[in-house]
Image (cartoon, rainbow, N blue to C red):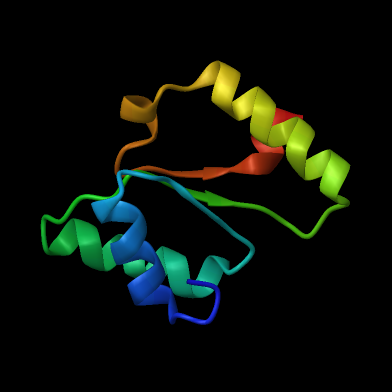
Length: 83
């Protein structure tokens, strides 16, 4: 799915009941807004700035230990919240 466009990526993640992590705020926030307007569900969009892989992993682990899948459903969150 790495070469798929953003809408296909989010649709795939939604079918698989997975959150998606992205650096692409502009496009995925627009998709989030479309999903809400169309009353479609997704399992979370997690935005991040580009950081070293160790930093990203640390923050993802903190997020996973803090929030449940249900708490991420239809939400957008910033990975920077989980420093």
